Length: 207
Image (cartoon, rainbow, N blue to C red):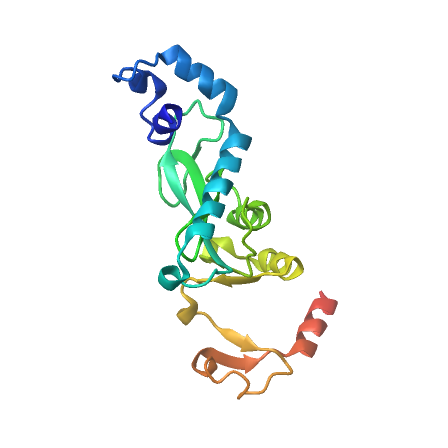
């Protein structure tokens, strides 16, 4: 527990060893090297999440959910860290931690990523590799967690990708050639004309 506290709070094992518990820095370092590694931490996170799901009172929390949301947060890191990069949007050097959190606020997966790496890949990894019994059917992301490739893979993998699209009100949304104006009444205010598929094909073939 002291090792996890020192690492999780960024206090460090040396500072933790200065407490009145009688455990030296060398003992803490030995425990960290032998037991605190990626696979063990991943397994521990999975066990904690599964236990939380098991002890939840449905009268308070409701029935089990199949929805999950994911996003990343930037943390500063030393330049010596091989994962450290300059973040174009947020500024400063650091790394990104990408979390998958189910609807009732339990983290089911987390991962370290570079500032420039794809959030789509991290999103799919969390859906596939989370260490719980949860069956994810709906995955919520922001604009950076979606792409054409993401929609294709989510369809093939059997879950719905539900992004929060940035500035969607200022974008043009087109109907497909087979859709009629009344097919999407809730989207009618933001829909424009139907796509002319034949014209698109002719344009591609003439290039």
